[in-house]
Length: 235
Image (cartoon, rainbow, N blue to C red):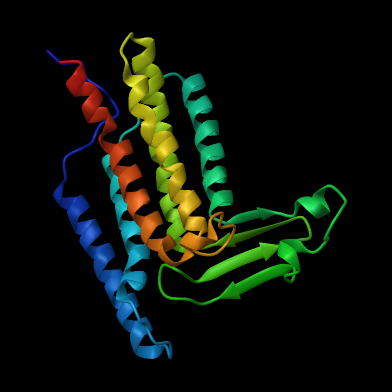
């Protein structure tokens, strides 16, 4: 006899598959149009396709995951933690930058190390762009589609994992150990930052997109299939 969890991996349904196929078709058309009309020369096709791995895996994971039903207070706490988690990932990946020198009244006072302030907009390959940024003397924020979608998906999965982990822990099980994905997926933000932004280990910059994509997919897999492992341990 097994205990039912309200956070679970739902089976693939026909409408879901159709939506994913439609999304993939739209992405294929966008890439074809970009390659046809853009003057850029693509040396490695995988870097054009990586953003869609993030987007499609993230969308599929969110659609397949149902957060548990629980108290409003627990949902609020998990929601705040998920928002903070997204901010951490965004900072590590360079989507959000803070000029500490200007913030504390010392050092350089220009945003983002001397870059112009205000709104910025630039086109890029689908998924990489369009990029929209806003910078002030204190902080800068940039929107890169595939990273924002991927990190939002991770934050949602962490929200579901936290709610389910606390719920199972309170029920006397050892579900808390299954939240390893909550910390493991931070590496997705850290390695993504190496691709341009606030990268920490510049020596890995060349393979940063490959590394961040692998870590992202692995983190999503851990967070999505974690509840299934919890159910198996309760049988």
